Length: 562
Image (cartoon, rainbow, N blue to C red; front, side, top):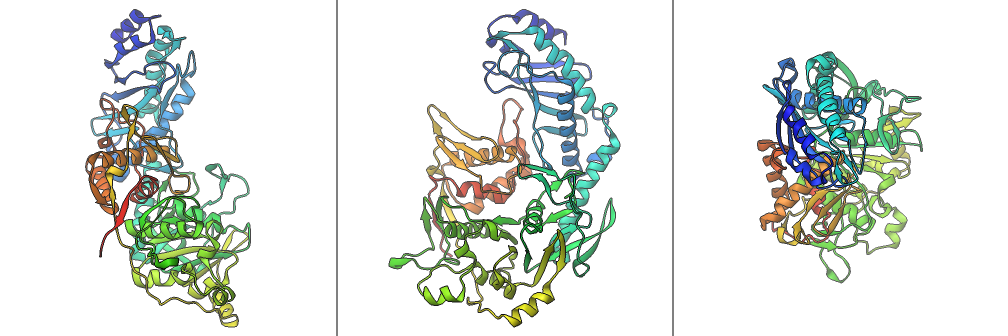
């Protein structure tokens, strides 16, 4: 501490570049502060620091297995974030002077690079805006941040004396229960589970926090109620959605899309108090939608869109500007290519001509290459074992292909399967299709088609939740709806950057599997960082890695022969 204070005194009022002298490690008795990178000016991205406690005095039971470990790391990240907002004064000079930040978590719980819980220490990775007056060093403000506020943050968040260990234990046990429940789904023959008492509505369309006033707690229909035993919470009940084709039907504003949205986020664990802690879905579930204007590179969409006018095949289909139906067909083919056991589809965000074609249009339009999804949902399960949950409000033809129909009325689910059978008998509809569907051909993508050059540098980085910068190209991920945090986008950008730098051509699935294997072996830190500080990253799913690769407009890909 004295050495740090001495350096700050020496560089006070000098040009901002003098802060470079701070790089290195400093002993604060209870913890070590390491300044990994110093920003070039007060308006540049903040400096990167790490604080590591001398030991780890938390109960070892809180991090006794990989699930508990990342759950505790998530809890401590949230504690540091709360402590920063309470203790750190914030802006006190030019640019971002005085700001202290740690990776801001969402409502989901993920492995992140923000925190490391080791048996011998706890380490938090943060960013600090080193204070400036104009473009000169403000040593007085820097002392306040580094020598006063930062130690208080550590004391309030990284040692047991400043942390509610019972809250930490509850957090860890909640995540452990959710992970166990999700792992039980295949053996129970289920694709999803929604616990009784769950709160599904969100605060607003721009917030993933729970609705606090007026939300109707979820209650399973008796016909679908399942009882399971969890390691910490014990016996719980809820609605089990079985494998096969399930419809969620009902009138407008009765909670259909809210239920489907909760299922789409059930691939992740949630913090206590979120309302969806025990809403879990198969970990490889993919939400499918239309995406007008997206690029498609060499995708085999022949299973949903047949031969085009002029005899053009769709087994190696590319376009820079896909229509709604074509994009939805590509999204399904790409999901199957990387691997999924569950598709989630909402009528509201789907292309009408992809979802259904009634008898009149079938009779009028004889040359139609699109096979509507209503003809595919049943073969997808019978042939490939891929289940589907579809939200339907206005297309009764789907009743003929459904194994189960859940009717939402006033936010309450009802099992309407028997009633749906009666309706289909009274109003028969002809469903076409040959009852068979094949996996789309895999693709090889050319790493050399991804140009990372941006001037004299190579760039592969995330920009917020929905954008990746690869050289001069900006990849739009706005419609990749199961991305939860900007940290996932950053990790995906680095994965793509490593693949592009390899110069090799590989199958999409191989690229994704290699990335996941690398992360399982070396952790997120293996994606690189500056002198031990890996930046702000969260663990992405294979499905979102593939989705990002597929949306690179410069991507060149060709289908492989079976």
